[in-house]
Amino acid sequence: MNMLNIATQGVKTAQLLLDNESLNISQMGNSAYTRRNVRVTSRADGTVQAQEVVRVAGLEQRRQLWRAVAGASELEVQKPHADALLTQLGGTDVASDPLGLRDFVKALDHEAQTVGGDVHADEVFAALGRVAERTNLMFSALERMRENVNMVRTGDAEKVNRLTATLADLNRLHRLAPDEAGRLAIEDQRDQALSELATFIDVDVREDGSGVYHVLTRSGHPLVLGNRAAQLEALPAGGYTPVAGASRVNVPAEGLGGRLGGHDRFLARELDQRIADVTEVARTLVEQLNRAHADDQSSSFSGTPLLSMTTSPNGAPRLERTLATAQGLDLNADSLHGNGKTLQRLRGAINAPVSLPGRVSGTLVEAMSALAADTGRRASEIEASGTSAGAVLVSARTQFQKQAGVDETESGGALMSYMKLYRANARVASVANELFDATLAMVR
Image (tube, rainbow, N blue to C red):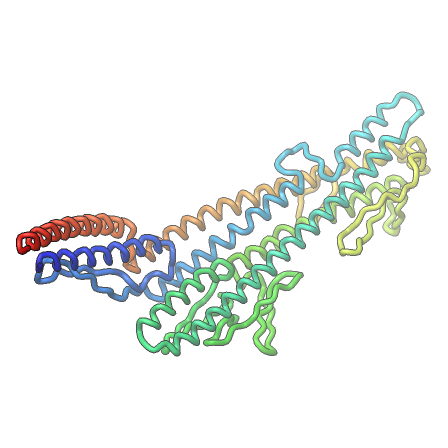
């Protein structure tokens, strides 16, 4: 009977060890799972006993892990945005023509090859209309992209608000916990919420003497103070505002990190800059062609005989062909100033080098190609940086798990050992049961 009791206790102990080690392994990717592990001690009767012990890696190690999570998320969220922007600008194909400028040049060149004075302007007129149409489609697409990014920013800000509210509530429960076990359980939940929050914002977590966490942005703006949480609002023009009562402070993207910082960094450094670049290309195109057609290079010129640039109701630039008919092009008309025919002046204008802000001199076609090339390089840089940040995150998680007492190799080996222990005790229990049954049969 004593043998059966010992074997049964051994089975129960092995089962407990199996359950705990399985939990260890399943929670290895969870930065909050750091406070519990199983230590095995021998008993006088030769069996083993599981003792639960507290394992804490320390707040500074958690901060390092959360910082790595935020860094990886900040770059990860920018990659699809950058790829979409590159596609919109024509991709990596050097022959792409997102604004239709190459087609317009071809139409002008084709008319220039016409023998004699019979110049047909229909092709040039149609190509000019396509330039206006494609440019407007480009502006609309870029504006939609901006609206979509802002929608994602708003959604992520709402997720942040839910997490900060959860953290404030967990801080309150931590103070009310009746015992150490309750506090440890709440701390695990709190760290899990912080791990999720770190994907959205690079957090600075500080612990007071009572074990309550205060959460700030990396620039020092409070998100959670004890059991009070601020509400974060995404500003359409970029940046965010933490709202706590009557207090409102604008936080720039540089002060956030994580997904929120990544969204804003893409808006400011990539999308808004490309919108400004394309707008400058369109503005220069309008001015160059209008001046060439009017044969007027004076500083006071402001006519729009071919194209005009206005602002649409949603605030995006809009290009309009002001010429009503192809005949109005007057491609074969001679200049009054000895500058050749209208066709020659238009060809010269579209092929002339122009100086755009922050760019080397080149034609408008080359300027659009350069924009796509720059965006492609930036997308590659984001991808490479994201890969590096991912490696840093893996390293941080590995280091954290070791410091927290949860090691993958060690836990895997322990799981196999506990399985053997379980089976061995189960066999002993089986033999003991058979002996017990045999003894009962003899007594009968």
